[in-house]
Length: 562
Image (cartoon, rainbow, N blue to C red; front, side):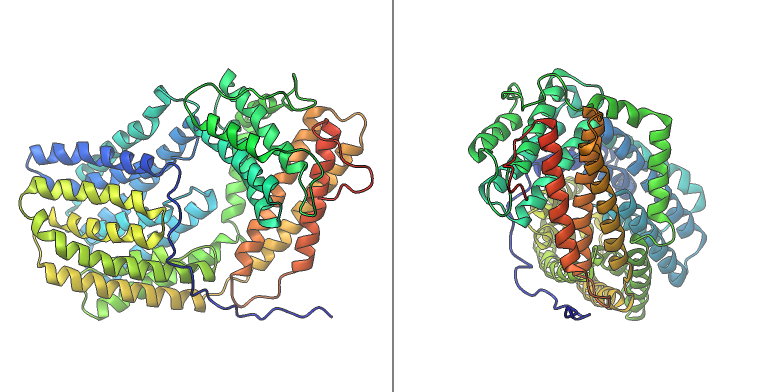
């Protein structure tokens, strides 16, 4: 009998604060949010109305989203972020104008945080996720407000959001294929890493990067010569993935060549033009047809159905949303009971803790604690400088805006060192407050939010993580069977085979993600580790078979296992 894994896993204690390499495009969100914030802030400074900065900042922070997306998709995504921010902001402002009850405000703040977490996870909107939404709406709930002021304050938020949209979309004017080039370069680098050191970790990373590159190209808009060149490069990355095996090489992928192509693709010069992969001289496996299909009404209906499934009964995002609701509410009430003047800080801290599983939530809790406590010390050091003049205050906030985005990709705790003084300095726009009181409140709220939030994560179990693995196993098996039927059908054309291939690749990426999430969750039945491994191995063997059928590779007749 196979031994069962224990239902309670050890929580990580090492490596949580280790610094990573900076993200490749860390400067883009950093510069975008600075520009998006600087113009409204300086305009309000010139009008002597810095008391309104909180409302414009709500819109300016939308510039943090969508930087990994092609510009066509980014424009739609950031617009939805702005509208979502406006909806939550309006609810918060109206609630603040109608009641002064701290208990009611905390309840509404927790409910908003849970709804925001649900939609961000269901739509996979990417970093910074729901935390910015929670920060903005929770602060608005506790800001003094009159009902007649709400339309004007909401208009300020929307105006700043519109400017943020311009900032995030404007790079398309001079480098319209930039995000697609970056996604393709990442796929080539990941394929090179797998070709150089084939193991299951690098294989999953390569498959995920190739899938992300195809998704970027599909979402990029009409085909251009540059995008068609990028498609051919992604085909080469796929070929490298198919011609390398965990048990040993079965083809001729050259890691150095793939890395050279990746470096040139990241640059501003022409896209590399390698020799076409076998079978792809004229045919790029129907990506234009797929792109056209995405624009059709049935494609939009399918996208809506996927979103409804992600939000419906049985959805794996709902337990995390319920954790957020319970944890944020309890953190706010405990903070209020302790007499803290800013209980919304505890709400935001709790909201930031919740990650896909308990193990990751534990890591984030420690990172948040270290970063916030160091951040209040930075605030204590910088507050005399910020109070020299209103302009100095504006410049300090902009500096910490930039620093937060520049540092957070190294590790969350490092970015929090800059986020904390920025959040505290924003309060100064409404009037100076005792620095010692602000420091004490923020430190206490951090400890309360982290402790109560994590205890709520332990109490609210996520049994659906195992169910997601089972569904992913079934989906991977179905996708593999379809791909095998396509390979075995002599009449199947290139589009049918490649569509089956991409569906299987996506299913394998989802399977590994589901397994990773479930492996860090408590209180659940043992994972079918052997079944997961067998499904991945079988799936990658089928991917190699599709590549062989397409003419991308030639496998040895005796042993072609991947």
